[in-house]
Image (tube, rainbow, N blue to C red; front, side, top):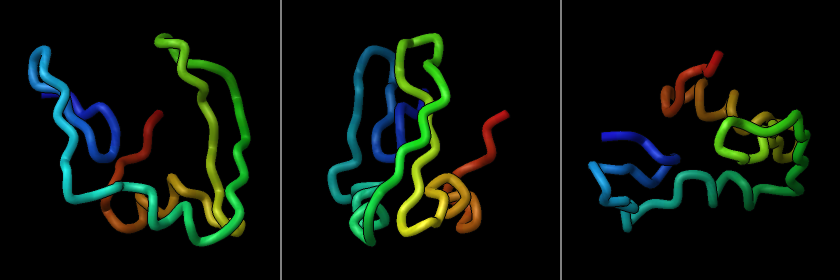
Length: 71
């Protein structure tokens, strides 16, 4: 099993979305979102920090035990 994102996992070749949650939607609707891009990862995805009303989205998830710091 591999965690794809906050509400999606991959089991073998099957990609499964947890249907009764949206991991970041409620947080992102709290106010204006600022995106601070820093590059791309090995899969070509943009790497960025997101903040909503000045609150860092990553720090918000980590503080609630919903994510771990990535190094």
